[in-house]
Length: 396
Ligand code: AMP
Image (cartoon, rainbow, N blue to C red; front, side, top):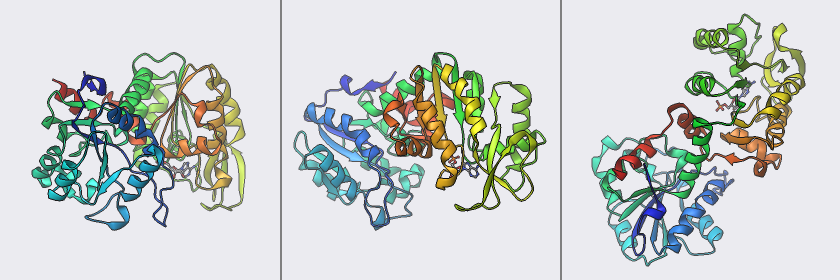
């Protein structure tokens, strides 16, 4: 059991909220995609409406110590614009300066703290056990709304909850993610079709095994398909193959009939945007001197009827080198197929798959676009996340 915002009395309280403002930043220091800030608005607005003081904390990027280019200040400005309301910013996340700024807050005020990861103890709480206590001192209640970081047992995402017994709750975004992903996990409407793409089997082996238990079909694209092909004795040319995963791949293929590999591939002579390419039949193997770059039209035709019967769809990871427009066609076409499956509850997670939908203007046709790539995979695999377990413990 976890507490929700509606279970807590927030009036006049200092509400310490972990959000995920880990937004992509352009080279000139501007925010290139503010979806994660937008995703936090319902929780921030709900706390303001209940008369709480909103103290927001987040990380941005992977700083090693204080890194001026990774300041969260632009996020405070963007949040203020989105809310049409001032948002304060303080250039630290613990210490006297922060405590004074919090003490000056009135009910309904919003304050964003500086990047938590400027302190090593955010990611490695044992490096300084005082860090989390100093953070905890800033709030009367704690809210976790950072789904994208809930798979990390960091100071602000998990460890901190113990300082808020019966006063630690899930924010509205976290709750929405748990409900959407949980419905696919526990009682999926069938057929349940999962699509997994991306670079490596090794990073997604756990989730693939779990999907093989829960889903009726597993469609596999992306570079990981070449490791499966090689494990089945099919030539893969110069494609990236994870030699250490060949055994796992072979055993998956031998033990299930649920896996669907690409029927055809777009292959190229070089890993380059403008490399000459051609389409080949995958079972015949990738010719010497060529590497796989995308799935081909036959694969999409074969997957279409599978998807059009699905009642639940989960998709994570591009099925080609999505960064190169010439090899993004498969991922985009797949996005269109999924978006057209109106009969299904569709869940898409992971930056590249979401970007493909966005570019095609199809985001709104998806039932649930998850704000966490790694977090959504780990939730499917484990059925919970460290950030959620910490809230359960605090709820008693
Ligand atoms: P992941 O983070 O595991 O979802 O992997 C995403 C990456 O996989 C992207 O950078 C894609 O370019 C890459 N990828 C997908 N398909 C291929 C492919 N056929 N060959 C090489 N890289 C690929």
